[in-house]
Length: 544
Image (cartoon, rainbow, N blue to C red; front, side, top):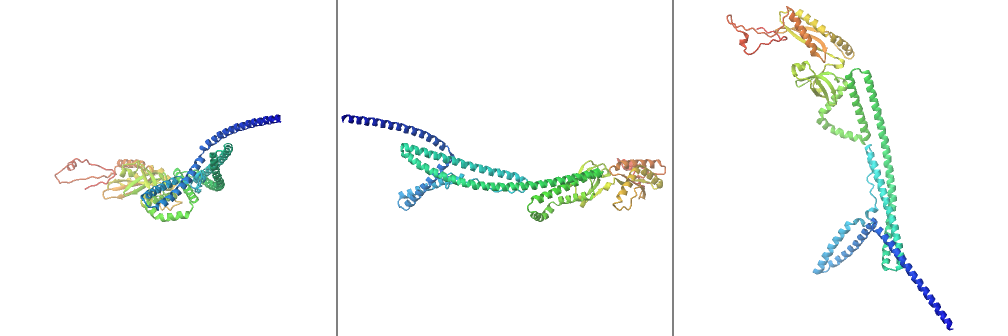
């Protein structure tokens, strides 16, 4: 019996030792697991501390906290406001100040009123869809599509970050539960309740973001497709316009080539090219206007109301444009023509350099006008096109004519042989003007096919007239429109030499005889001191 008791004691001792060793081992294992869990939990907390969404969530919690405090302060202020006494009056005043402070704080973080992540829960606004009405708006539309796609990417990134955050919070909850099971720490229990609420809020946010992402993505895809369709339509319309403009350009180029081939006159060729370019430009402008103006009738109405004011304010401009159209369509004046413009007593003779929409550029040459009146030449004068309606403009080279009548008057005395003088002048003029006479005959034959010419005889004409103090021999002949003075000078000198060589022809010039009496004789130079007598070969002889 005693032995059995000993054995029993021995068995109990062994079991106790084994149980103690087992408990010691379990405690060591729990401590090790607890340390590992705390370390892992610490790493998770570090990641969450740097997470922007946790920061925003903390702002949301702050908003809710301030909101609760504000409700309580308002209740206290309402309660103490009804109590009497300086103490409660001061307390009520302080509470009202706190109310204003809290309201300002809430206003500062008001974006967290309805969302744990603030305004980020709402995607960026889609904005106004651009209207594609011209090729330049295509660039704006492409930029708009790029912005929409970027907004979708940003919102998708927000969802991914929130999903990742939910996983981290779930992992933190799991770690906290395991650690609580080991340590039974009440603080961990409270943290678990907070984490559970936080996880619930973020799950709600993820659900809202997922739904919004789906709707937002569909809306963006719809708008993107509509904008792309509008871009395609505008590209097609622009392509058609480009094709039309290219066809018009090729047509104008072909017309220019035909004009160059069949029109030998360089001046007419130049004017024709300018007219073709102008018509091409006007057609292109009208095509673009009618293509890109939505309401053409509205434009016509506006122009109708504004036309009166525009016509008054820009009368000269419009008249110049109409003058240009009249010049280009009628062919009255062309580049290279020699013209004469007379306005307010001023005479300009020169060659047309260019005809623009508003002005005619004329380069003065040495002419009889510059010799007798201007005494200056070589200037480039700009004449407004509207002058053709109001002033005299003479064309010396109209419709292929390259010659004009020019005349020389020489005075001879009454006792001269005027018939001989006429014959001499006629012979000289015919000799020098023969080439221009033949050229004029050919030109006039062409002109007579288009115009009625009563007198088309280009032969030189010599006239003689009786003037008060002499006989005038007036010689008329055709000469080059661009070089009248050269032939005039040659013929004048030859007639002068021929008249001087004839014994019975005397050139008349101003003379004066003074008779003071039968016995007095005074030289003319004493009567008019310091004035030398002058003699003009082409003036009338005067005898008193």
